[in-house]
Length: 315
Ligand SMILES: *[C@@H]1O[C@H](CO)[C@@H](O)[C@H](O)[C@H]1NC(C)=O
Ligand SMILES: *[C@@H]1O[C@H](CO)[C@@H](O)[C@H](O)[C@H]1NC(C)=O
Ligand SMILES: *[C@@H]1O[C@H](CO)[C@@H](O)[C@H](O)[C@H]1NC(C)=O
Image (cartoon, rainbow, N blue to C red; front, side, top):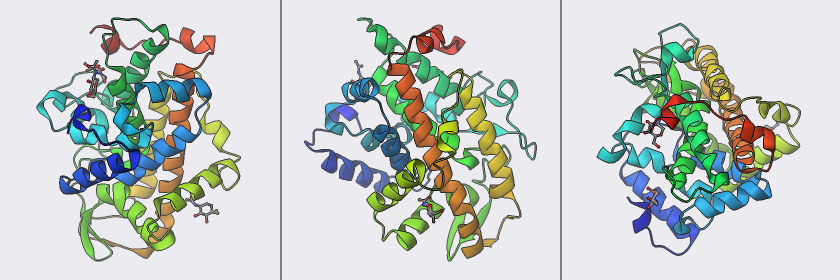
């Protein structure tokens, strides 16, 4: 699917088309489900300050109807296209089995060893590209629409604990098990099963209701005391490392812990892990907004805190 070929007028029909395409073409899910990514992006867009809100609307293709979440799954769709194959390793990080740690210099590379080619490196890369937006240089060497979609998507992925998983089982993809009655695997449980189960069980499959509950918990509910510390970040280029470290920590404590190939996971696993999944979606949204507000905002200090990622500047 090309963005340019989408000519539907409204955001709603675009959304339906995007969802339809994903459902039709996704036997393998590679990241937060469509729902997880959409929620992260909806939460983020709701927290944008005027300058960032304006920049995002400006960068989104017209067909998105101003809705960032309509295209937050785009990177999952294009990763299998020849032109975008290089983006495939950017969705995750493989860490050494059982190490339960992330070390950027050790772990952030693609299978061929190319440095920075992992989700933490990608977030820095596309953030640094978006910094060019403010300078408004006419001959841009980057496609900032794509940079926005990649950043928005990868900020979701880096918060999915199993996206920073063990190498030998591909972040839980090779741990086959049952989710209640159907076949699944540990990676998918965290990508989508837990989200789809709560949507069905607790929200009558109403995404809007789920989103409102998340937003309430960020502003007034369970996480309201924590949420401002989620935004703490002195240097945008190193914060993705912090988020990836949190993820592998959660993957070890809550994802892999006491799960074995062939297990059946059901109520106990669901109810104990659900709060982790919802918190990670919320954190991804709050932090994506923080990044976009700083990248597109007026604050001088953030322009000065220039990102120094070799990959981005050697193009
Ligand atoms: C930027 O990327 C989008 C999505 O791939 C594409 O539709 C658009 O034409 C590109 N813009 C330029 C100027 O190449
Ligand atoms: C950064 O983005 C450029 C394309 O815009 C790409 O060529 C490069 O491989 C990317 N690097 C990382 C670490 O994402
Ligand atoms: C919001 O917080 C309440 C109270 O802790 C909890 O019951 C509910 O599941 C939370 N909702 C979400 C989406 O996190």
